[in-house]
Image 1 (spheres, rainbow, N blue to C red):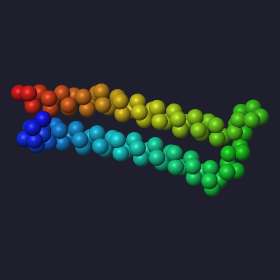
Image 2: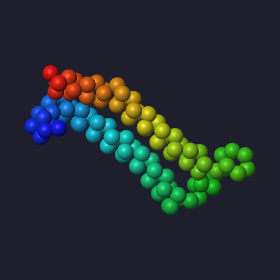
Image 3: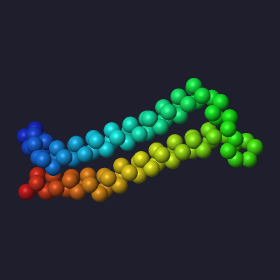
Length: 102
């Protein structure tokens, strides 16, 4: 692509909105995941007795469902991003393409 075309695309309000919305969502979801993960690690490091709580049967402690919860959180956050990308970001990208090829 020629530099002039790239510059023209970057000046489009739709492109600026796409970058802004995508960045905001990505940073928000990343902050949620990092907070959950580091919260779990800090809990393990500074309150190991918390993980001695038995929640099921004689052997399943609270750490197991919390760990599974972290994994599921990652899937949910990925799903949120994919949903937003398919619904909002793709529409903005299509409008940008239409303006460029017009």
